[in-house]
Length: 86
Picture (spheres, rainbow, N blue to C red):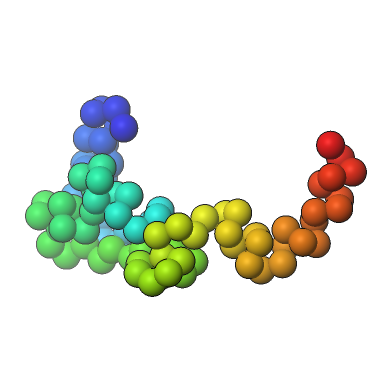
């Protein structure tokens, strides 16, 4: 992330009450934008992470759009349609 963009996110996080994110577990921590980093400047911040399979467990770290489509059956339903388009 470009430092200017990072600084803008940090600036916004100082002023908000809630932050909702849906990145894979640990992604924001690696950018320096995790809960522990953001609450230093905004102790009242409510930080919510929405992930398909939680923060831990067998699917927690690897679940993305493809896994969701495959496990839900959407990929199966769209498979033939998508192959015809190619």
